[in-house]
Image (cartoon, rainbow, N blue to C red; front, side, top):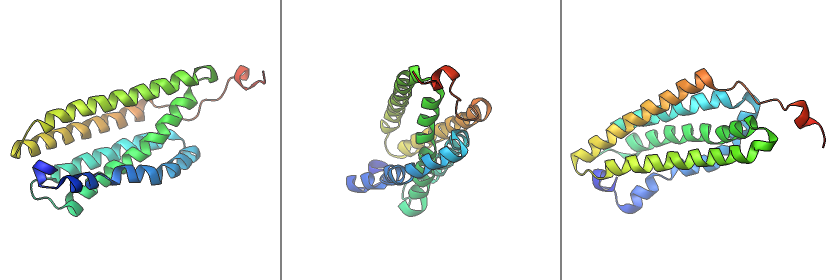
Length: 175
């Protein structure tokens, strides 16, 4: 945003505030919604919202207006992240037996950190560009993000569990 769109460092940092703000405000509501309808619908809708946000990023270019080009894309992206984050953690931990909840939590954290590492490495390729090539690299990265989000939604549609795992009689019996 600084070199590609001419934002100041403050403006570039402030431009990204909607993502953590949405997560902080809306996550409790998504948790409650996940409890009512299950994680699966949210884990399908979330990546689709992320894909819409990534597609809207294709309209960001030199001279783009924050309110008309950047904020809408970040808004959809943020809503998608909110729809995924809590329900995914809940689904992973609910699917684990009582003896394996720690391992499930560790796996979930490791996968999240691995995804962040991959994204950081991919963004490095975008930031190594400058001028018009920077916008082009950003658009390519947004397209890849959209395709991966749709692929995630498709996988979750086909393979995600239907609802919370029922504890076995041995787990529900008092010890």
